Amino acid sequence: MSQPSLFTPEDLIFQYTRSQAIEDGVLIDVSEMAREAGFQWPVAVTAGVWALVNDIPPRYRGLQDPDGRLWDVLWMASWAARRGGQQTHYRLILHHGRQTYATLKLHAGPGDRGEPVITIMLPEED
Image 1 (tube, rainbow, N blue to C red):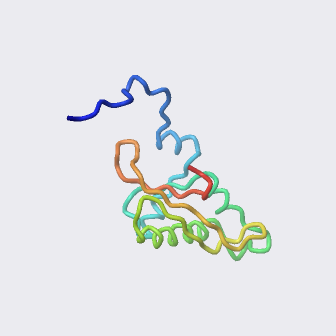
Image 2: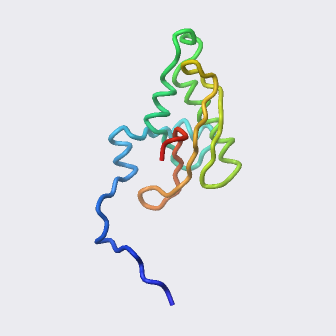
Image 3: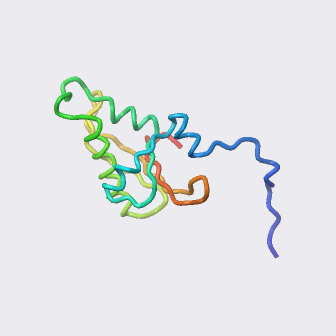
């Protein structure tokens, strides 16, 4: 005998979809480059990760650019994804401020229609 659901669709107060988050700039769709890095599912990064990718310290300008840094984020994420699991943390060299390494979180979950998607975020983001 199945248990009754605690919540019904009528109980839903607010829903914010992945598509809305991309439209609002909360998430940035990087699926095109992610496919080159080996991902088969759509990939988005949070605005926080996007800011980190674009925050190149003055002494590294001319040596690094946002596309190259995004490639590093995605390539290392593709290796982290091979470990499996719904969520994993990974580190990469990404000069920012006084830091040389960045730790990011990769989360695999359902998209707006239940399809598999990947989101890369800062460790403290949900």
